[in-house]
Image (cartoon, rainbow, N blue to C red; front, side, top):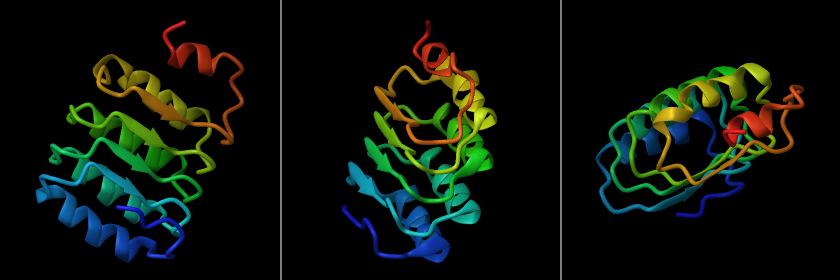
Length: 132
């Protein structure tokens, strides 16, 4: 489902999160550039704990931040289907990247995590996330 740049905001993300909790067929969801912030990201993260079909989630250019990154990382430890998570240009800093690093041992299914163009200053974070 491609909903990029539709300005759905947090209310739209929360509504979609409710549907994702029970949706058993949707495999990809692109919510990039939709003015989604804390409450919307938190709802989407929570829905990932229960969803068993989504393989790709694109949240690029929304306001995920470190709190949202932590919520997503935590939720992914309970999810075994998501393979691609795009959180490019979402305001994630070192603390948010650390959350993904802490969860990395449980994210064997995740094949691609895009953290590019964020506020990550740790020069070794990329290597650390790749297990180097």
